[in-house]
Each structure stands twice: as C-alpha cells, then as structure tokens.
Figure (cartoon, rainbow, N blue to C red):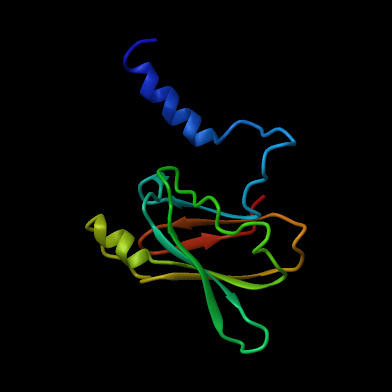
Length: 141
C-alpha cells in the first residue's frame, strides 16, 4: 500500500464505524449523537456536550455525562444500557467555545436539545447540523 493510501484508508474506516459485532460482544450505547459543521462541511470535532436527565421527584436536571465529539463528530458511549431509563433528557452543546476556537463569531452560545425516551428497549440517535447562525436537529436512526 502506498504511503498516502494508509492514512486515507484509516480515515475511511473511522468514518464508517466499527465492523458489525458478533452476538457475544457488548452492544453500543443506546443513545448517540453526531454533529456536523455545515458551514465548513466537516464533522464538528472537539465540541463539548453535556447529557442530563430530568428527575421525576425534584423536576431538576441531573448531569449524567460531559464529553467531547470525536474526529468524526460523534460521541460514543453517552449512556450504558444500565443507565438508560424512560424519561426526559437534554443534550447541551457548547457551541460558543466550538466557534471561538475556530475564530468564528456565532449567534447561539449553546444549543439545548430536549427529548423524551419512552422506552429503555429502543436506541436513540440525536444528530445536530450546526453553523454559526443556525442549527437543525431531528431523531435519527
């Protein structure tokens, strides 16, 4: 393999994700996100995000995890299957810091996506399409 082909192959493999797992391997996170920087046309690498759950008894947000997107704009392992329970969740994306690192002014200092997980048996994917002046989200698959 030529010296230029190996890095390209590695990037492609990372983008496509891990190979199919056998039934004996542990399942991935039941909640995932993927952030794309639509202004630059690339994954939003290094974007800080926080996952919280609304507690039934106190109606207060409990922070479950703070993490950063990987080079492909993904944040694997947000929740384990054991942590997953029906309820209202919030993903907070620190967009101000992301754009500031890139020397870009932006309109939204953060993006909060609040969503409901009705069943622990399902998987949920919450993509975010991001630019300095707008964002879009939806329930992915």
